[in-house]
Length: 63
Image (tube, rainbow, N blue to C red; front, side, top):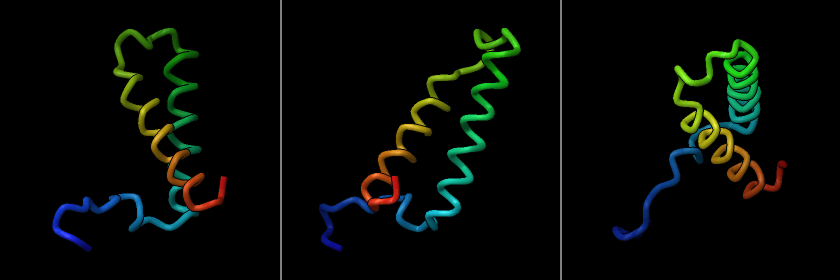
C-alpha cells in the first residue's frame, strides 16, 4: 500500500461478518424507532454504519 492510500477498515471483515452486522444494525434501528425513543439515540450513526456496510458489500459484488 502506498503511503498516501488509506486502508479500508472493512476489508479485514468477512462477508458473513458484514452481513450479520448489517442485520444487527437494522434490527437495532427498528427497535429504537418502534420504541418511540429515537430522539434519545443518535440514529444517524447507526444509519451511516448501515450505509457503509452496504457500500462495502456492493463493492465486493455481494449485495
